Image 1 (cartoon, rainbow, N blue to C red):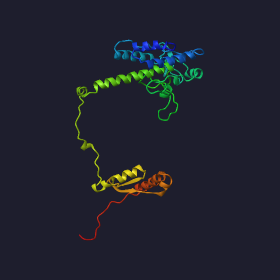
Image 2 (cartoon, rainbow, N blue to C red):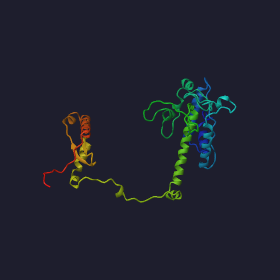
Image 3 (cartoon, rainbow, N blue to C red):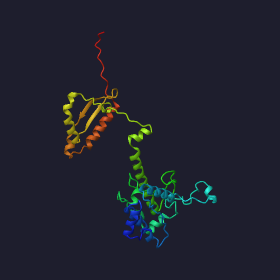
Image 4 (tube, rainbow, N blue to C red):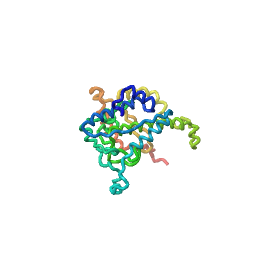
Length: 294
């Protein structure tokens, strides 16, 4: 138990294991919050014992192995008839508000103890477990975190993790990333790749650099176009549909843009309509005139 452990004892324990002091403090915060809630409800606690192996790499491997063992969803007994029914292999795989390991009622826990997920902060990003695992990274909306059958892989389940198990899952992901970085540093060299049949070929940059088909006579106008881009003056390129070459380049100055405080939205809308019209009616290809002479 780390919830009531003094700071000096945490520092000594961190020195004996591969877990940092910040990670120890995170676990202590989670356990203390769970203990505060235990006066009214029953709360689960994770019995994780960090490895004290002197070799940090071997200690991390043992911690990863133990974390996988503790985070495996609880299965029903092989003698239970419900295990052999469809979807009945796991005991607590019922809904997103139940821990798949200990069956804790997460909704009941959050209602009486508050959002414990927000109290556990990652020391690197400064974000809580709630922000990392219960919020959509794109929209920011709250969504349930669901566990996986093989912890970090396998099919998604219907249940989730309680705060202490989710913190252990977070540490497991960080340990595996550290292991992957070290393996990449060791096996990512050219010598290691050659052993696996991977070789590199020197390719001149001139062969892959995009060819600039701008005529030399127009090179002197490059500063002018840079000024246009800085002032948000729209530049329209009209591409020939047959040859794929920009036949016409249009620069439009509209007083509305300058009178509205450099608001180019009107211009962009107008030019967008102009491009649609050009696409619907492509420019005709130049043809040789026939004056009747053979």
